[in-house]
Amino acid sequence: MLQTIIGEKRTYAAKGCTHDHPFAQLIVPLTGSLFIETQVHQFKLDASSVFFVPPGCSHYFYGQDANEFLILDIPAHLVANLTRNEISHGIRADFEERWHALRLLLLAEIDEQGDAGENASSAASLLHLVHYSSSLLAQSSSSPSLRYIHQQYHRPLSVAQLAQIEGYSFSYYSEWFQGKTGKSPKAYIQDLRLKQAKDLLQHTDLPIYQIAQRVGFGQASSLSRLLRQREGISPKVYRTRSKIRRTYS
Image 1 (spheres, helix red, strand yellow):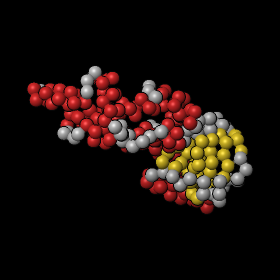
Image 2 (cartoon, rainbow, N blue to C red; image 1 turned 60 degrees about the horizontal axis):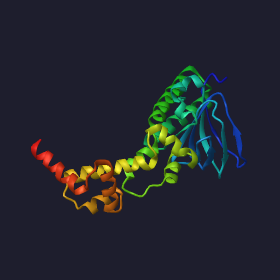
Image 3 (cartoon, rainbow, N blue to C red; image 1 turned 60 degrees about the vertical axis):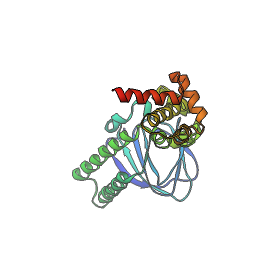
């Protein structure tokens, strides 16, 4: 069983390999790309993201080109907060500004350990950085596809596209999404679009067809049909009643 954090630069061959290990692993890109597949993930890990492999998670991988990655092998007890059931197959996080800064600090610590040998000070520093990376990963586990839906609900969205953003296989994504939100991806997007449309009906004088297009329904008839199903009234009546309520509230 791994007792201390091991940090080093590694490269991966083009020949595929499947394994698991009792410790966790943080894979941070330096150059090139790595294909990774778990029970639910299937994606190319490159400069756009990092990946956390939980203890015991079986994963298949191979290098897709000339590559180098910063790897942290982490004892399982140090990342117990990242091994809940819903993320037991890994966490993929966007490689944003904080990860850029963290990568520089991790590289500096690893280089220092290589030059002077591991000591209590450098081990403590590396442990502090691992704790910080764990907090970033916990934030990322909130789901990139959900964030994308809320940013791009007004555009055409497909389940295949959302599954790819999440790094999940198409067959798993809908089941995972249902468990996380209580709705199918289609129903969740539809509800979000309707909520935005109702807000525009209440607070603007935009024509109904423009509102439908602005929130992603495309046609006024789609918005009208859904609003009648949910509220039992047309968009025009909903707008009128909303204005009356505001007037007398």
